[in-house]
Amino acid sequence: MMVTLESYLRRDYENERECEYVDGELVERTGGDTPHALLFTVAGCWFWEHREDWQIDALSSYSIWTSPTRIRVPDLMIMKDHLREPIRITPPLLCLEILAPEDHHDVLFPRLNEFLAMGVPHVWLLDPIERLAYTYTANTTNLVDTSRLSIPNSPIHLDLPELFARAAI
Image (tube, rainbow, N blue to C red; front, side, top):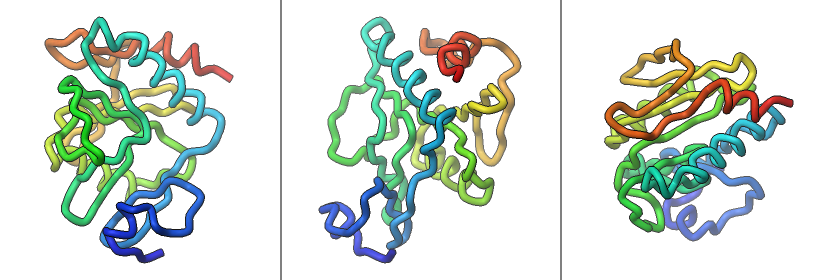
């Protein structure tokens, strides 16, 4: 569905699901199956539980302006600056995406590249089915081969075995 940026910003369109804005088109977000939803909830709770110790904000469904014609909505966004922008224009510290069955490489990787291009220093990808974690850097996914996914020189981390155990069906 084609809409103007102004209509998107006013949410002045007929669509029941939350959408992203990509070059004039509404793009539905993926997700919705049980493994995705469980891991999404558990990861969000993990960061929320640590927010005071790590001095972070952990937010879901927060729009981020990745380019003049694109507004994306990462699964989770971690911020250290505590800014409250209506649509995030300041790069967050971390964008975390959780794979859904309908995620395809030709859609997912350009999206992750947009986060990097706008200045997001850390992009993580979690696979709830295979129970794997990846870091993402310019067109490369790197499998995390330890039990801990972390931001260097920071206490911010995910304990992967615990996270995946909490999200078990």
